Image (cartoon, rainbow, N blue to C red; front, side):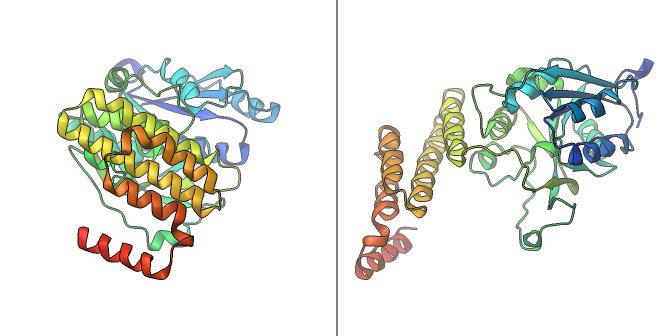
Length: 320
């Protein structure tokens, strides 16, 4: 397979958003340079980093394969990635976050796979979760991994398909068709994009752990409730794009998402927030029996007698 396009044009545009975290950023960029597939360009969208980080990025600019967008700080991953996407010239786009790493054969394996499967316009790989020092987390030994391939919209909706942003490569044409990242979303924007990609194309999985997703105390964090709000927005907006069977799946998943949010609040002792979450979801969840039962359990569970809790468990077993 050719490593670069005729005339030296990039085949893959690597989109990398950055904001400080220089300790990890260097390693992430080094993993791009280490790729066995060399037909890439690197587009770094810097979201207003500090001087030290900017100086490092500036040192990369003599390489004609590297382009840097200097942005005023937004704090919006969607806006930053979309800014880089607007400059992409490659046939394919790969995503890498500033604290994650790629195995050396990552791009090569995915481009080979996509070119062998003309019906697939995007791809993802298996991944390993690592700590700040790059050591696999202890729970990785127990994490269930199921490789979903082909038509995976339903599996993305229900989050059975486990997809991390640095594992994805997609054609630039498909990303344009899907509309890029939703800039109104501050959380779950990656999940939202994978839903749209799965609507328009089958996926080609490379079932190899070619991505290292780093967990550390400088991870980009948002209010945890935002992930539920973002996911609800995504599920709601997709309903107008699918047939009746899939609309039912999306509605049911919205119900489960609402229950999970209420349960999370209740677990933290925020009973009022749990009730507000249930009240907000009432208009689109009231027809689901599981929503009523789950809501009662989430809000009143600690106060129910052992006999009532036992009856509830027996009912759920018989109903499932």
